Image (cartoon, rainbow, N blue to C red; front, side, top):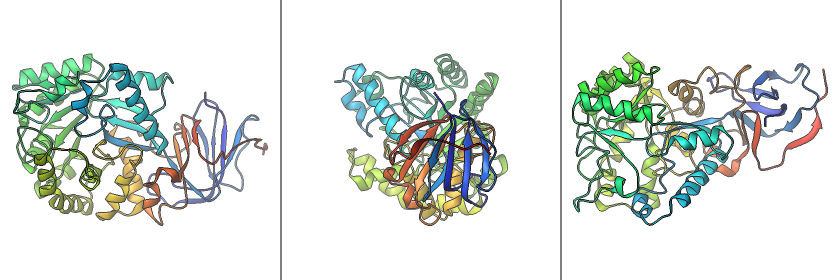
Length: 421
């Protein structure tokens, strides 16, 4: 249960790009909301049972978002081994990955394919520790597209893993697919507008669902509480189809061209670059020779194109595509964004305020402001001086979610009562 907390002595990054506040005070109440944010000279009275957290030498920030993750997978080819696993084992492994991500300072996440709505409900009920979840459940793809994992052998990796996908080859079929995923508990819809690096039958530059089919998906999602639509889109042509079709976000966007950037800026579309996905190459993760070759082929151009999107001011939100990125090291993505031209402050905003805006929750999350939910990440040192401090989860000393301390590495949360003022 939440309890009143008083954070004192740290440097505060609000999350909206404004200048940090030194020696800040943040007060939360026993409903898990932030009730005061400001300097230390004159904070208001606090509830008598509030716990004081001395965060001197640390930076207080909003809890981060990972806007593109797949908690159900343990690796790019984890689906192979799933056929030999008892289902409860997979459930506990998924829960462990969620907890590891939370402890890295990520208090909210969009799971864009595979993880069931039951994990969202379990997290909401306090049955497992993990980020607040929005789930897409299943990807919408055409036959032979990115979500069609039928190999040359005839084996369908997705079906073998006990999961599902939505294959739709006409606008009418796409509309039905939207209805099915929403019926099954999806919070948003994900379409495949291009092929992918790991797809058996296509490449990143290949187009996926057509502009008409994507527009149909967007229309059907709109009819159901204006659900948002995310587009897996790596090649330039598919990115343009997706934006013209009305999607909220471009996922990956690796080969976005100038026209795609123009459209994204014109329509306010977000791009989630998932640069961390390429880290699987450096780690030597198990993958097919074709997948490795494709990733190496587009990596350098990806860096050029995403750097251009950053420079032009396209709205960038942080996401890792874990397990291609690393669970528990999710904030490495911010370091990669800085490497392509973002300032450390802008990278933090990409993982907080901009990400909350993408997820449609900026009214309650994403910045440290009075009245918002107390999701906070407290880091040792100053990430504005070195964003790599956030990449190491050991530097995330405290994580607070909904006003409840869920990680306290230094045991800073004292039993002292804050004095009334």
